[in-house]
Amino acid sequence: MSRLGNIHYPVTDLEKALVFYTSAFDLKPKFVDGQRYAALDAGGTTLALAGPEEDLTDGAVAASFKVDDVRTALDAIEAAGGSVVQPPAAGPHELRAVVSDPWGNTLIVYGPK
Image 1 (cartoon, rainbow, N blue to C red):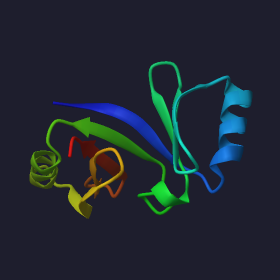
Image 2 (cartoon, helix red, strand yellow):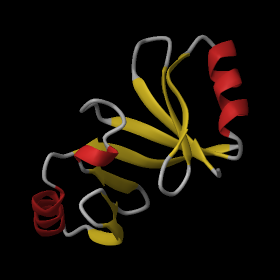
Image 3 (cartoon, rainbow, N blue to C red):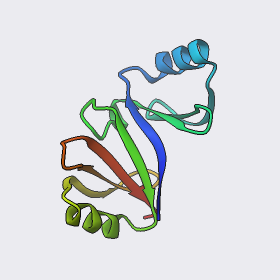
Image 4 (tube, one colour):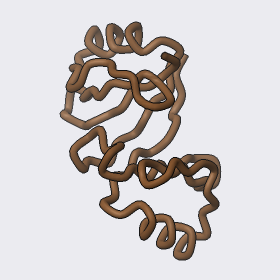
């Protein structure tokens, strides 16, 4: 089972991005990991601000899907016509991989280590 976990939004300055999104849209921080990453509550969806150290997608905005098992999800993605762009790697909080759908859209798949 998978669910949309967040929208991965790369930013070059996390501190300024936090000020912008909290001031302009009144989004509330759910979790902040220094200058690496911040999760903001966007009304039922999480906006994940990724600083340069956490930018998995080379600047591309991407939907991130939380799954029970990353490797099983990658098999299903490939079987459905998608491709693995970056194989699973351990991040600070989870196992994650970058994939693309058959149309070239970048997606992140993440789950427990």
